[in-house]
Length: 340
Image (cartoon, rainbow, N blue to C red):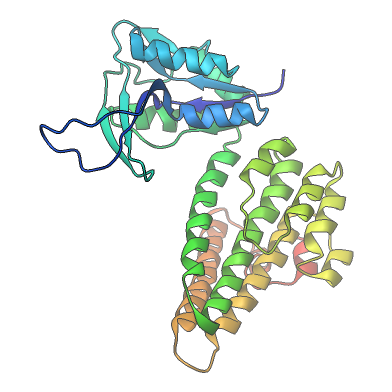
């Protein structure tokens, strides 16, 4: 059986209602046009992953009550492994009341329930270690849940996709803001942001497939649209059996000459990508007039400087030789980096 995606905590029930319009005032009576009780919270992620064809397991706790029963039935009907969910009469299942008007605008009512698990059960540890990815959405109203989730991530051997999920959310928000910048400045800002997204997608393909050995369908779900790396190129790269073939595909848009001669390693590919990012940031900053584009370019250059400072601090902490440290700073020579 393939390694599952493990979804941990925030197993709640959603009581969904549709009404004609907001606001709902005291003494008002509105007809509810839709009413359903089912899984909510991080269960939604588990269900979407299962519908994409992934093997999914949920870890969490539910009350031995009508709400917990509805959650459990909903997850099991999607083929999700619920064998390690703790169900107890001492627990009260958290519930979200989701009220939606005819325009699709939601309002929420929350019942936090009563949860009891505040340390990682031994029965969960092996499942977490065997997982190909772990998801936790960060929503926690009950004391101890955050510590529980952090303990789960420490237990995991490769929390690669957890970090990717955070980066993906950040990049989608960044792209949305970049699209709001108008004129010539907007063009430059969007070029920079599109390349930052391309860096994420490039390393997602290279490291996710050829270092962490994650399945293509999982990596494809984490792809961020809107970047300068074409989806077709990404799909070809994650389908490659050999790392060298994936490297050539991903490196060619960044540096056609370097792609032909450099060692096919993830660190070399990352060097190419960030060197190009620095060139785009410099071009944006060196515009002749003071503008938002100049400010964004300046911030991007400072970001590279911060990355170099982190590299220096970590290198000194690890006792790295000075010449090796220099070779890891941005910008750096692709051919030098290939031999580090």
